[in-house]
Amino acid sequence: MHALEESGNLSLLVFDDRVFGPIVSASLSMAAIRFARLLGLSLVQIDFRFHPSGQLRFQQASALADLRIGGHALVRRLAAALLPQLFDIQERAL
View 1: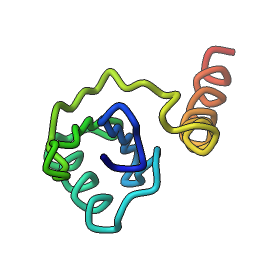
View 2: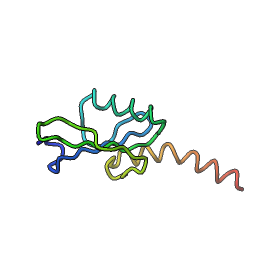
View 3: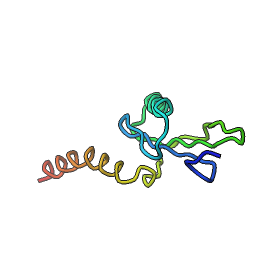
View 4: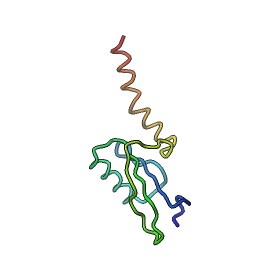
């Protein structure tokens, strides 16, 4: 079993062409980014399962992402992306 998750699962989040979650290979990160682009989503959770053979297998992808996977780094990135827009909306409302 892979050291990333004892449960045999691995979840990554892609937001704005950046991968958040456990540290994975550059090739898996790039594949996740390409997949998010193909889906047309700026935020997507991609779940994998480790097969008993040790291979990583795609399980599912969802736009309903568990933001806890991305940790503080994702929160900072989301805030940077959303706060300027929120301030702009508040100023227009005044």
